[in-house]
Length: 320
Image 1 (tube, rainbow, N blue to C red):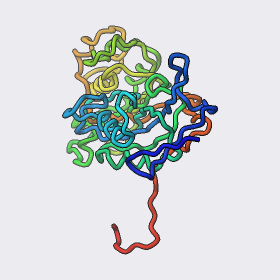
Image 2: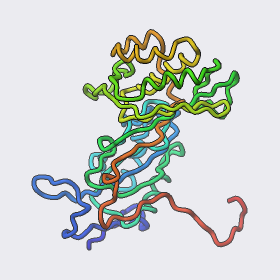
Image 3: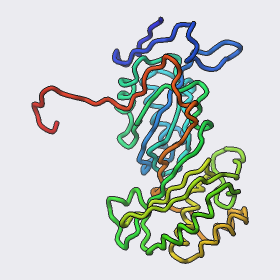
Image 4: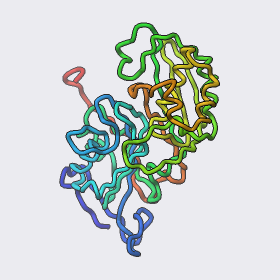
């Protein structure tokens, strides 16, 4: 067993598995197994002041840049070595509770709690790593997904609650939730969603417009409407465009059966006749599902870290 230590702290020891144990090793390069270890993170963030997930160089504030910066400072690796990849490239102002990302290192940790604490200690308070765990070499945060679930929050009262202003869209119109539920049913199933996808500014090629929506629920609790949609994947701004149309239906400006008519048009210009995208601050990426076999940790890997609970034997200064 060969041991290596991070220069940042003695509390972050790492060790390489012996050459005979290749269960945790990476892909083959030129016929040789590369000693790369893959790690999965579940990330939560308040997207209010960030320009989305996708990396952009400073001074543009993005979620990926901040996480990479923390990882670079701790591991002393280059971003090209870390290969940080997010499951969903959330837009400017969009929040997340269950974003998933993976990265690689040429060394293995025998305990992740200290590493986990170090990352969160560097990140801005608006970004937190909820969990970090070893990942199977075949796991890919983006391409291994089975489904994603988004929630769009609407505050449906005449006067906006200031405690919800950063995380919910304010509708001064009393929305007809039954009409919205009827319209939402038309989205469920496999459809061609060209009418609901914006052309991305980033170079992503031509995405497949056929997506499957597994459910689209509208839950009402006092002044809050939660619109939850789960699907195999989504086009750029697709969720915000679907929500915007449902809001128009809820205002009774449009009938519920407008949804299949716009779907059949397969033209973004058709939707633009009736609605603009819903504002980003009401949207949150809640969770992402994967094939259980893809997220099972490799043999001999360290246990996942969910954060470290601090305890003290005697409190000298209360509340500190």
